[in-house]
Amino acid sequence: MTPSTSSAASASRPLAGAAWILVAAVGFCAAWVFIRLASETIHPFALVFWRNLAGLLLILPIILRDPSIASPRQPTERSSWMS
Image 1 (cartoon, rainbow, N blue to C red):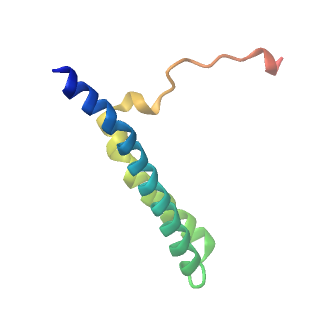
Image 2 (image 1 turned 135 degrees about the horizontal axis):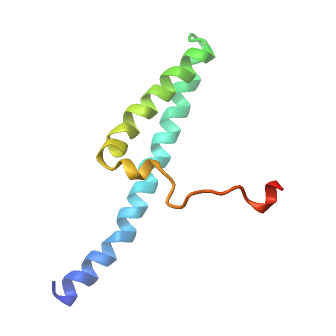
C-alpha cells in the first residue's frame, strides 16, 4: 500500500462515520413517525413486539457472522460497589 493510498483511506473514514450517523438519525426519525402513526390503531404492546422483532431481524445477521460481538470482552466480577 502506498502512502497516498493509506492517507486517502484514513481520510474517508470520518466521512463514512458521518454518513452512518446521518443514516441512524433518519432511521430513528422514521421509526418515531411510524410508531406515532401506528399507535392510533395498534395496541402499544403489539407495537413493542413488532418494533423489537424488527430490531432483532436487523441485528441477527451481525451476531451470526461474529458471535463474539454479543459477549462482553472482559468478564464482569462482583465489584466492590456491591459490597
